[in-house]
Image 1 (cartoon, rainbow, N blue to C red):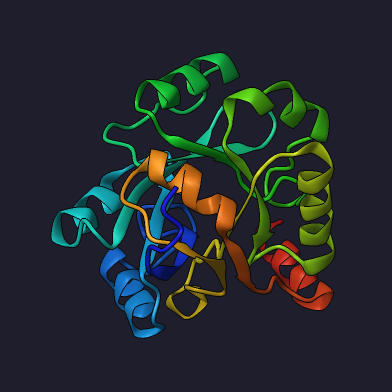
Image 2: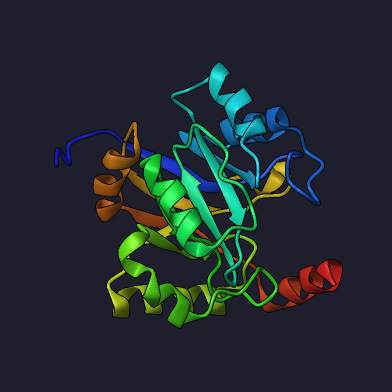
Length: 215
């Protein structure tokens, strides 16, 4: 790999009004990310590519087309660099096959967050050879659980990835990674090996406030 490529700041987990419980438009999230100096963002709306595809048409070098998919396994799964929607509610095998058919970069978001669709560690280990990463820093998860995910990633030898999980414009770039520039899933698989996380999750108090809103 050519590690002399320009270093960029990327947020790999951003939602728009195409997702549930999000009111900010794709354009608002995009403009906020630009204003904060991010070089790339992944739009990862729940079970749809609509917002991501629309933004990527306008700025394909900046917007990574992604989807956060609800499947029949505990937790959720994210695919990046997608061209077609992956249907929700399918089996883990079907979902992983559909993602790999598109050569997606695949990761498990917020694996240890009980109010963010908890994904048990044994489930992650069963599919470890079919995913590229797990999210080790999520801007809406509290820091203790992010630390647990990071430790799990290190012990199990699974690559880590970071994102804000932004649902509001002000939260874009709350967490992400600094890494060599990339243009597709294969390049990201190499670049992320040299990545450094940035940003934070939530304090315990703020996480409890978020939990109250969810339930």
